[in-house]
Figure 1 (cartoon, rainbow, N blue to C red):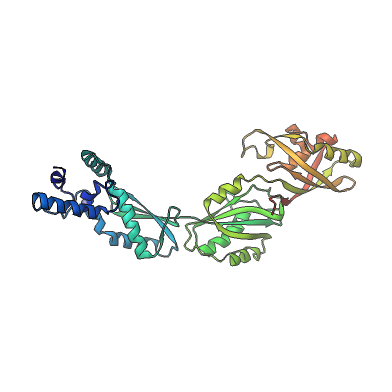
Figure 2 (cartoon, protein in one colour):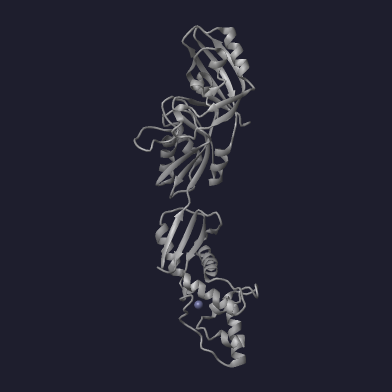
Length: 381
Ligand SMILES: [Zn+2]
């Protein structure tokens, strides 16, 4: 009885077989449809096969057309892996589902079969790999019969050193001028033939602070790259020889996940700070002040100078050690090891009481940073 009514829906053999996709996993929908058709013929006599199917619109015979449409779109883009997505008319999908319900079945949707089967076909023709984390995502819109391709960004991990006191980490929204982002990104863009780039840093230093020592971790992202297999040695060489005093190392390909990882990393940082006072520095008092500041809770309210960009909260920070390199008449040079996220300029000057205690409050006179460098990030490398 079931088999008799099955062929009254004007469905093609494949779409008929799909109604019972959950019954037998050893068969494709087309094979199952054929065996149902055979059963029908032997039980009830011949049945006319449907040539123009209202459900699939014979889309499974059009893989070659879609393959060519994709190829025309991607032209020069380099990729190793892909993923297929598709859009079908919602009412068709609902109709299919209700038909499957009528037979007490939970079959497979046409969308799912199409994505899988076209994926196999595409892989066979292109020699590329089907992947959940693809270089390229292909969207087939079966309603308007068009194709869209999304190219995944290219991500490169590395560490940078900045030996100058006049550039920001990222580009200004308006205007030009060098930044660490533009110095690294311009070179990557040339090599990857990308449309744009973004730098994701593991924290940042101020414009006037040098980043020395073992370097700061970053991920540079090339948007819509045509070339993915870039030569890392060449990339490094191009940045380091650009005469911009920004140097990169330890480059490797990475994924978007690395951006999150490095953004969440919290390492102690070591700074070399040149400190200045309006008065003669009292050596004994200064030494005592640096000793007292170590190991206690520092309450650091968001500095006035960055308050527009960050929420106004109090962060509790700890200073791991302070070593005094030298003390002059009204200057001193110290090395400070501080917890990730400590504002060192404010740790020294007190930011009008917003950082408490500070080196100034411990010392009992106003002290300022004259120059500051990050000289190590304690990642254990
Ligand atoms: Zn069909």
